[in-house]
Image (cartoon, rainbow, N blue to C red; front, side, top):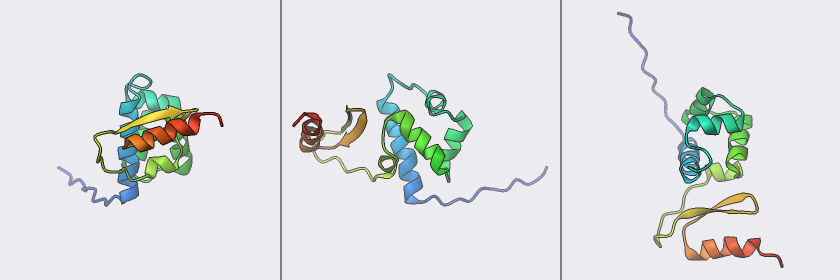
Length: 117
């Protein structure tokens, strides 16, 4: 039986945050995309490409396609999540942009930003 090489990969914090944030957004969009395969199709990439992007070193164009399909910025896919301190945690879509909030103040700020001046 041939020996198989074990993959010893060390993932960066940014890579782990990217995967966590995409997964979190996917779960929050359960009405829109129920599976990674549906997200991949919406992003115009293959399901294996999405999985590879989430597990490793994705190309910028792949990240952009994923962000576009989720309706968020590329930067938001790499942001470190704030720790829950208030018991409030969620996402809100304002004018087509999804914003993560962890407090009533952040939620109110997102809502206020959407109101016409």
